[in-house]
Amino acid sequence: MIATGRQIAAARALLGWSQDELADASGLHVNSIAYWERHAAIPTYRAPLACERIGDALREAGVETFLNPAPGVRFAEPTARLRHKRRGQMDETAGAIL
Image (tube, rainbow, N blue to C red; front, side, top):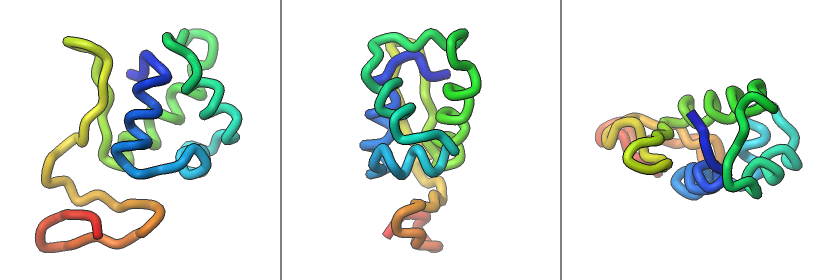
């Protein structure tokens, strides 16, 4: 669950994605990504579809969000074979992004 705009920005930084790339991956407009990143707290009841799409795009990229002990983000699995949408290459032996 995404609770803060900082989680969105941190997840993008973890992936090395721009707002445009997250917008493309989530099917939202880049202005939506920028709007939600500016919010300290995201009221999911106001935009459940947007929050769901952002969360889905981040999960598909291998990033998970969490709320406890404090809102944050991390790679779902340290050795996960992630496919970076910008580079699109992956080291099959180690599961690392090239």
